Length: 257
Figure 1 (cartoon, helix red, strand yellow):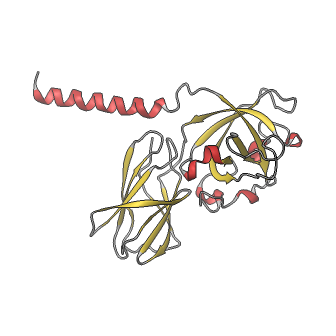
Figure 2 (cartoon, rainbow, N blue to C red):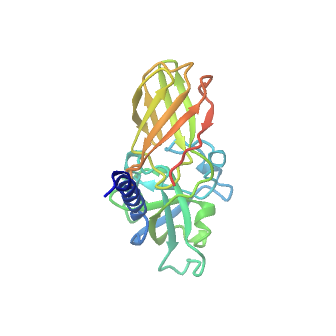
Figure 3 (tube, one colour):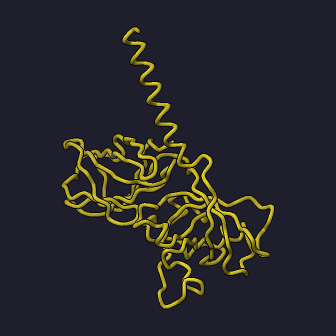
């Protein structure tokens, strides 16, 4: 076989394998049972911020279609940004016929060990529980129910635009909150490259934030990400200009499909 043809076929097969690996995390995902409550009011103002560090969820692109996760699902923050399809089941309070709602994980629902797991301690491990923003809850059930049984499954996150980076820190410590991630929605590892440096591995801080203890001021910054779920890796080249500063948010053109 011609070597150029062989290489072309190999590239195609590798690409197909990567696509298969990424879609396998979602296609035909089994529905699992859990429970759901809601917090906040119809404005979803109480859901702003959260343990993932996304800040104002309207500005971050998530809006009110969000949820806090019990610790079993939250996974020390590696579940931040993941998307779940949720439907109400086996309750007279369900809105049957309504489509399942899709929400993004933006917060943690902390345990309450003073209460029984089946009587107020809904987020105690190993219980699987979603504490939804009220607008998301009322799409599938009557809010007066308080708590409902649900079925859920992971789905791919559909995002508009590139990945967003909110910068914090100082001249020797760069802290980056990663938002608007498509595909699996999550990040397993991250690295940063200044225009005058090699790749520097960033450590997981908490939620959706990663940090590098390096002096990177005055350099254009690029990022490398690997998804927690699919293990896909992408590069966001020159995501922030050399004039970047703490407190600002930058957006790349790159995103997971």
